[in-house]
Length: 177
Image (cartoon, rainbow, N blue to C red):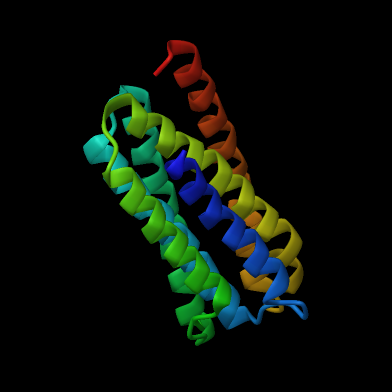
């Protein structure tokens, strides 16, 4: 039960911080920091899952998360360099990092199928929260057309990740894993 609370607390922090901290909307440098942090959190969780996951399917999903989110971070980094924008730390990026750190700490205590379930459950909740933030805060607040275009371009990947994670979650439930 503690793991579910930890996973959800990070996700809820993302949603709350995205909506509360930016009543007027985050700036482009703040959006850049949020995007990079959100992707890095998922890359770090994926790396942990590669080393600890029990299920082959979960390990394959973790590798996909590392590959896809690394690609998004590469694109985001290239864009902010091109635009001469320095990502600006903010309450949402800090909350994301803390949630990611808390999730990793909780996952490190688990093994086998308990790890697999907790990792996948978190991925479902995390991708839903990120999609909600992208749709309600990040895309509407982005002022730079190229930054907005990048967010719109990567959104379908987050949708696909969410669906993949939900399918894994269902498979793990059926197997009793």
